[in-house]
Image 1: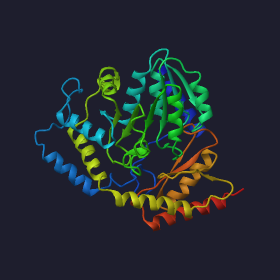
Image 2: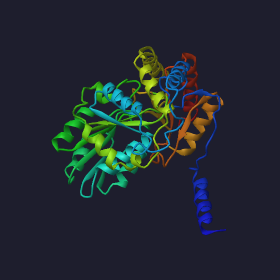
Image 3: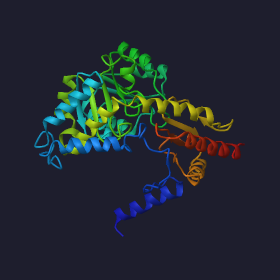
Image 4: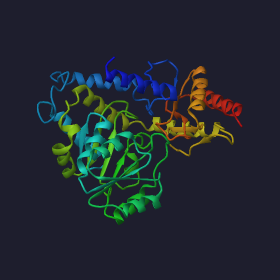
Length: 378
């Protein structure tokens, strides 16, 4: 066997032995408490029909972009869509990327230069970490939502400094003390970047907009694959930022542009979002119902979150797997989140609540969890 194949086999064996081996699984027909489809847009027949109608009203649109936007792949529809989305979030400009991962990779790898500084909340998404790694900047992490830790890192910063946080954290479901963080970044002349991937939905325009801070935040990243039920992302900021990314963000420059169908899906999702107050109210109601019904006891912790992301810390990969297995046996699609995705000792089940979950489904979820935590109480 070739050395490269030996390497692959050995690394996979290590993963299997450590209990961290990953496998793809097809859809299973269980009750959805797993997906990021918070408002039900991915399931929406109304949205599907509006996308079909939008595509049909543009019969000359291509099946694929057939090139990057700097070559043959740019169309007026994309530029108009960027302006519409920027206006929705009260931003001067925006630039579309093919995914949230691409957006964070392109933004962070191109912004910070050698001698600059990037400071990350320790719980930011992997795409943010990877984007920072690809830059030549000095990099620091600060303790999650900890203002003292952030200020200590700001005092070490050199060159242009970029602080990156999330509007809602994907593995804990909590929000940052945004105003306090922004005040600190302004004190040290640092630029604040907020990834709003999981914030848009319960908050139709994101946390930054909700707090009226959009003119003080340097950049926002909004993705369309969570509450908006589609795919892709946009970086929001100034016209200068948009033009800079067009010139320097490699994940934008060197990739085939999104298809017309993808752009139409994004456009129609934003139109639906404007008329989704009932779904947002239902989502808020379901979050409160779940939090009132679940009882983790003294041995396990339900993290403090007002978002659709609700996590119960179980403390080991084995316990997280067993909890997920019990839930799935009761027709509930909940997945375990294992180390090293989260820190060792914080392994958990991550529960995603939706506007379309019924009260009976929520009761079944809470009852099953309560039985599990009671059974495994120490």
